[in-house]
Length: 279
Image (cartoon, rainbow, N blue to C red; front, side, top):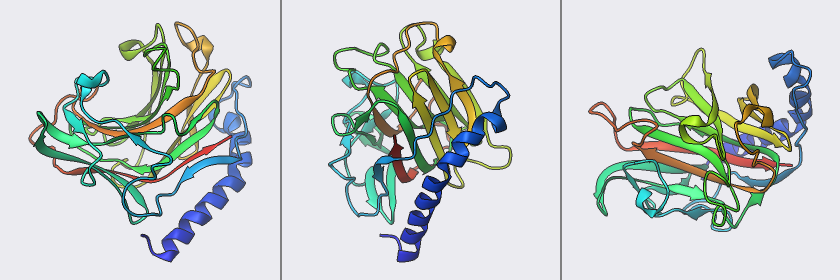
């Protein structure tokens, strides 16, 4: 576990964040956009949080695992095999650590992990955020995202997908926020990137989040609002008025990033300091 001073620091950050949500939310439309129709809502009651201050496996009351490859019915031509082994996913020193390894495993050349809250925590609307330090290198694809809780009976993309943060390891200063739904999925998704002017997402921690209401999804990096998506922005049905669950994963390869190359170093880690959800 972290030293007590680090735990106190995380608690202090949480209290400061809770206390500043009203200021932040009320100020975004002025700071980021002159459009007075921009939708912003206060979400200042925390309903789920994992500070990862235990040790060992992630909390089983919150997190499930996807095990296997894209042959299980999900994936984007990715190269990793997802496991629940401690070498691929563990909680240590106050962090959730997802590690991508280059190794032969069950027919795949890489291993990693994909966690989800399906059936354990699902919510309609709110503020969803995570403080993370991302990996780096060609072919690495970490994501913090959400899927409609009805996906088993309403297959993708009809169930809806909100990508709070996606990252190409070969572009260390750029992340993307995206929504997918019927008529606007995959290459037709509605997306916008955010670029750090002086920094990289793989060298320090940043907070990635959304604020989501009945007619909008707002995307944030470090409390900077960089995009708002509304029903007017999508080409099909707006499918974001129902509960969604959370996923966090580190993929290797795939259509979005391409395969690793000779300069990609393994192992690579995705560090998650906390996940918090407000209503």
